[in-house]
Length: 420
Image 1 (cartoon, rainbow, N blue to C red):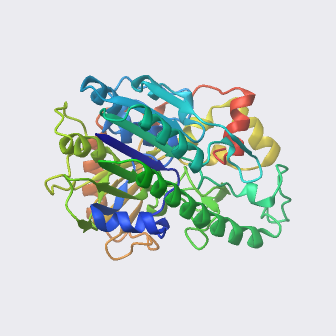
Image 2 (tube, helix red, strand yellow; image 1 turned 90 degrees about the vertical axis):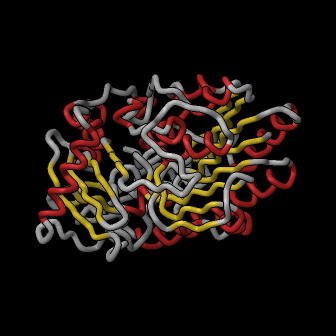
Image 3 (cartoon, one colour; image 1 turned 135 degrees about the horizontal axis):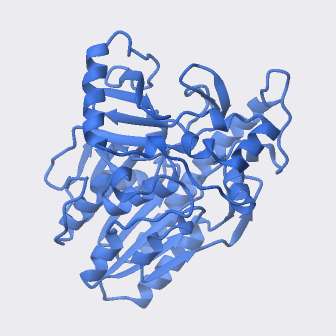
């Protein structure tokens, strides 16, 4: 049996127009609203591979992360599966998720500084390695995890060179409009490319069960002030289109399961990244310990989804980040840390710069673009969701903590990728 879990970094639900990805939606169970538990790579993937929220698996930051939680490949290894991961980008390889895999390859065959992906492995190389590995283990039980980095662009890279673009008197990038259009076009071109590579994988190898999803989305022109970020007081504090906000364009990704265990259906109600592990293990008839997620196999759906981004708080006490902020006035130290709780009708967003403070409430059933903050008009609902949020996170004290300092090399990696 061959099982594949493909995570496409920055994948939005509207990026599934390739022939293969669009076809997968009709072959199995397609959920168009899967809510990730963090909008950046390492904590989101840890939730994806453990079935746990960040306050339980312990990964809250991008680099040098560590979790003691049991991972999906560890469970499958105990069941006799061969396990392999082929990773296309940074910073996922900086933690200890590799410990659950027999084979773990971080592929860096392309040096792509102009589009902000640094040294990364393009989808065709990852798929080629997966095909060869599966051929080597033909006739055995195999699990392959693929992390595609092809869609991970940064705004700065759109200026065609590593030097920072010039700012005008209002601290706005000069001539930014022409580059915004190019970023959007390149995003969908790469989504099409990844889809073609996954199609090749399924043509050349018999895959019994496939899961396709993303670790977070990506903000696009016209959405929440793209590319600008605003703090809870309405001040513009920097430019970024991933990792630092909890709007649906960042935390909503598609999720597809195909295989004999999955019926053909399209579900518009929300599910979560933490539901992948219990659902897949149930489909494979593998017993497992309880996790934060639930199995979707029999139609049960979660009422609430939790998401967090401690990007702002974790850089606030970092001396190197302070220095960069002084040099370039990017405003990263003023970014809010945020937590949210979401249902199919409402989403509450709270700042987490210490004590939680409710700041935004959206009726996403009627306002899916999250244009109208109605926290003042719907205080009863805000209080109800705030109480639910507090009960969910319990005594988690991350909102009072800060990250360790990073060295100059790591800072450069994060900066080039658009994280700081």
